[in-house]
Length: 300
Length: 323
Ligand SMILES: Cc1cc2nc3c(=O)[nH]c(=O)nc-3n(C[C@H](O)[C@H](O)[C@H](O)COP(=O)(O)OP(=O)(O)OC[C@H]3O[C@@H](n4cnc5c(N)ncnc54)[C@H](O)[C@@H]3O)c2cc1C
Ligand SMILES: Cc1cc2nc3c(=O)[nH]c(=O)nc-3n(C[C@H](O)[C@H](O)[C@H](O)COP(=O)(O)O)c2cc1C
Ligand code: FES
Image (tube, rainbow over all chains, first blue to last red; front, top):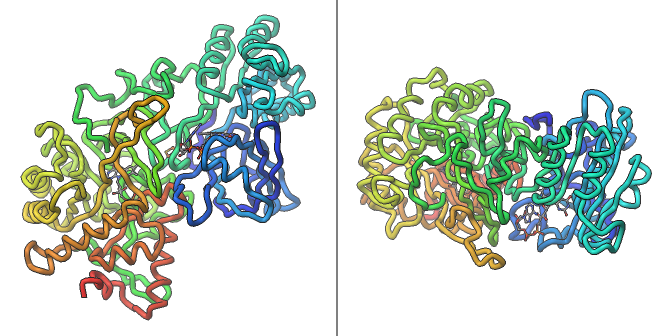
């Protein structure tokens, strides 16, 4: 995972070019000049919501589904996949061509491609599959063999199943209720793929519980797992310190690390999974600068 | 540092804040801009009057667990816990970068006891990049371990103890700004205590203590339980605080000193409102999360507003609303 340190970011009021339904989600196409040259799979975009007079102040983050280069940079497009999860995302799903939305992109580090081609598994849970087809294209272009596992609670929450066949060498669909593909979790086909093939790398994007399970299986099998996490972000650009997770660095020390700048993609071995429970993450006692004695709790 | 008059749209925006002479009044707000390189991708951080850094303590701080924020109507709650690298890493890594791009740095310092503030200030006063530092902002809106975690800025004696400790270790020509909390019954005695103890100016306001409850879990939303409210929602509180302290200065109740206004500024008109209440500098905080270009945009908009009104010197409008 190359560091997302201070690369150029496009900041624009983007024209909405398209908004189409994909299962339970909407795919938004936005005009973002100059984004195609720099964006990589696994990076994200931060969008303003609610319009200029809105009281919703903070941007919402979305994985970049893909970018398309225009005939010149001014014609570049960026696509995201939006689940209607609350007031901000609901507003986005209502945008129509001609509307404008503030966009910052590309943000974060993105997945890193292996030095040499190999065999890999790409795993997406729900809208977490959004960046995978684009990632698969990059991996295949360098000669890697790509297996793709797509999972969701139900059929309409799957994303990318239709185009997966065109970008992956094998596709495995699972749903919890069996409304599409096999009944089960993404870890079921993953276990089998890790057993039957020589998998060197696993790439995953989805809910925290899934990332943890996928990471553990991959590590056990000796594969490198890159997981894209999703933490609440106030700024998306590294200035607020709200989006942190405890990450073990190359020096072995754990630091509360900004997922918007040094992530959202991390090596699964670096994540201190045990600190997370119930959507909350504690500071491990051995983290750099962890409070040694309880100080006043006045939160600021 | 650069004290040359600075004109934008034919308006002289330069300000002198207790000897801190800046080309314009706009600054970042502590904790809303990190320490420079992140925002420098969006605008030249040397173009705004001063860059205010994240409050730095003596040693590295992990900060609190997550969630660290909750969005609220026209604002947000945060409970970061002053995560930072500690003063030694700050002077060897962060400050040199800010100096290298020519930023005028107002360094925000914090501590859990008066001695920690003084130690941090002393390191800064003697560090190699001292010339990039235009002043220190003393964040006394943090908990005092010696006083059951009560925030220094809620008590005149604790505020004075911190300021006099810092004053004693830094040269007289290094301006000190005490950053006040609005969470007090009467700001005037706190302002007086800070100024009497050696502060050259005041920054107000820090966030307002608030809380949100996650109704699914039926538990506090923030890991740190309570958090600081910021953003446009608190702008009227900032205007009121600046107004009250300015009024006390004008009445001669407390010494006259420059005020840096902060709280909810999102556009040029918001900055002008704080200036009219009595601020001669203005910081842009939470608005930066909505748009990382916000501090720079506020500067452009403020200059245009003044030009539109035929004002040629920003200084003429400071405290204008007091008549
Ligand atoms: C790196 C990253 C990539 C993401 N990719 C996608 C994607 O491709 N497609 C998609 O539909 N969603 C994605 N999300 C989640 C999306 O950002 C949230 O669903 C959205 O912010 C919710 O906003 P809201 O106003 O609709 O909901 P509310 O629940 O009302 O939001 C309230 C606040 O909480 C924050 N928040 C709520 N849920 C989340 C969440 N799951 N993650 C982060 N912050 C949250 C919001 O940003 C906002 O500040 C991603 C999040 C991150 C951090
Ligand atoms: C995420 C966040 C972190 C902050 N950290 C600090 C800090 O370290 N030191 C400090 O003095 N103020 C800190 N503040 C307060 C701001 O500097 C400012 O006083 C306050 O947010 C009001 O201004 P605003 O509404 O423009 O944000 C922080 C505010 C936020 C939102
Ligand atoms: S979201 Fe602000 S630092 Fe990461």
